[in-house]
Image (tube, rainbow, N blue to C red; front, side, top):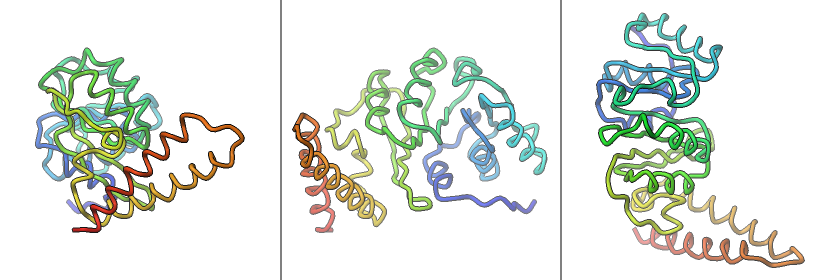
Length: 234
């Protein structure tokens, strides 16, 4: 069957870190495209597609009907991981939301996550907050990747039960494995972060009162520039 749907870089990046599995739970699936492509590429046998919004879930239902995949999807309307049973999914996917909300969903539903469950995560922001949450529940990041889509950068991470690595503040923000991968996406991302950080430092420098935030931004800027200089030596 010819597939008319287009796969973007973000979904492609998520799927590149998705291990072959029997059941993928796509939490907050919205249009259902990630689960659809996971099935069509043979990465999973079944997708539990959930969303808190029934209208959003309807889009995913319509997509499955269009390609006659209704039997490969299990649609559930509900909040976070509340719609799952323990050990029901091999991989739990969370994407399209911020790292703080993602952390909240994981902590509230941690009774649905066991040592055999992997977490595939692609936050929109607050990546450091999310990595700290993974430390709290004793999950280690085994794979991670940086992706650029429509001018925006996304960090994708696969986490599994195990002793977490001790990460520096910069590694919590960007990811140790991402920082070790010398590619053009990382180069662009580092430059963007350096420029953004410089603006923040200038803004704080113009403020009447200095505070701890200035020290934090200055340290971050130093770390970013050191990584970028290392990158240029490739």
